[in-house]
Length: 192
Image (cartoon, rainbow, N blue to C red; front, side, top):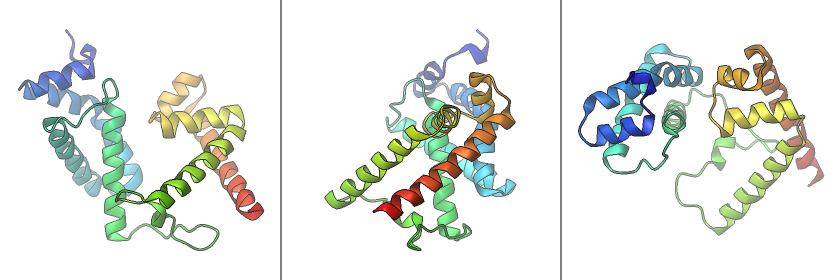
């Protein structure tokens, strides 16, 4: 069987059964997507390579500890690990410009690492509900690209192929979706 035809889940099982080559196949299969995602976040080729290696070290540890429960969703799982490592690195190095809300508070201050208390869960649920309701108000093409990108972890090429538009069109729709969400969030904050 050609290696690209072997499903990710079968390769994961094979790796867990002791076949190191199965993990190598998964890494080769997704190296470009994972590296590109990391590079787009950190904008430094050498740092991206370090985070890529750190990502797969974490993947290996998680697999060996039985923490992988995402059958059929190996790539989105790896991308989430990589993204979280990028955010951790950026925050540690403080290279990210301050992103503030309308009250001047750092938006990363809302991200909790520890278990949220009841008040935090209520605020998160309210914010999440507001965001989902605002996403529903976006024009259909913008909403579709936003959901496929952020909730489906698809690349813009995959989105373009799936929706039958060019990559530039998909990128433009995403840009307008974000701009429109920002405007709606500001309006929603002003009404409170």
